[in-house]
Length: 277
Figure (cartoon, rainbow, N blue to C red):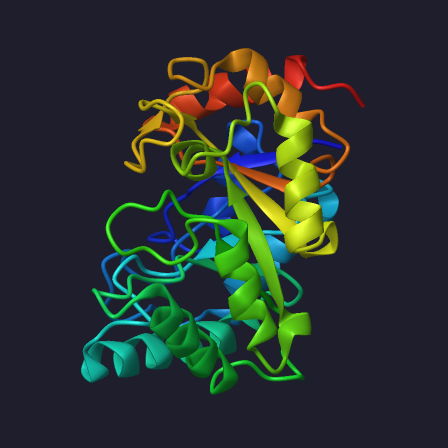
């Protein structure tokens, strides 16, 4: 089954997100636990949460892919920034237990000229102080485009984080198509080979979700600029091939294209029409 959706606003609560997902033809979605630039989170209304869970159950939703704030940097060269990131993730994972069994996605971070080895060490160290064997949420490391000092520019860096994390069974990966394309993985001409490399380096059992985005840039540009589906260098044919690939089927697919809700509804419709059950 194609589980597909986009980012929705949490401002009106959980039930409102579920109803908006249905309006655009989605059966999964992403949302930020708090302002994407950081800050405090709204108090959780358990009745509101239960209404969302009922919507998801009745409409056969896939797992949700909740997103951490962009400002969270677990490998910053600034201790206060790292401490803030740890506090945010710890609080978010506690909040995620109100909707158990879903995914929490985050950008690994930027090493700020400390070097990738140091960045990886810091991220794993932070995760070792955050993850719990009792949590139901799987934390997803997102593949990155490699701009600046980003960690996660290749599969090897994500594997290194996983290998250094104690409760690694609580870790998975979210594959962002724009990011890996901009990072140098040719998913247009060699998607099978890219998936084989992912499997060899990380393991397909770790692949839990996909951010489906076209790219304004050529392969290997390391820029990370998303485009609407079919309007970038990746193209509609590659997007259709990706969602129909055996390794991707049944994973939650989240659109992060530059769209309004009508635009997302159109993209979801087109992709559903080209999906083979």
